[in-house]
Image (cartoon, rainbow, N blue to C red):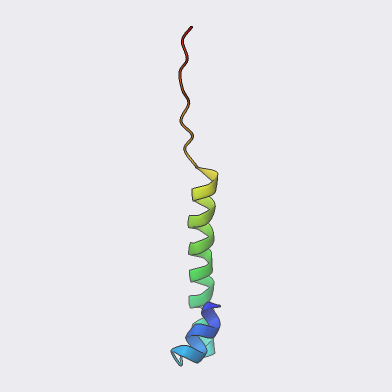
Length: 48
């Protein structure tokens, strides 16, 4: 998706668009994965 946007939309060279697209995909993958993996769940402390 980022590759097509860079080559067709912003008229960048394909050799430059590939590493940029890979970097964007890596960052999106990292942040979405960290949001799902490290989701904070509050635990209620029930003292009886």
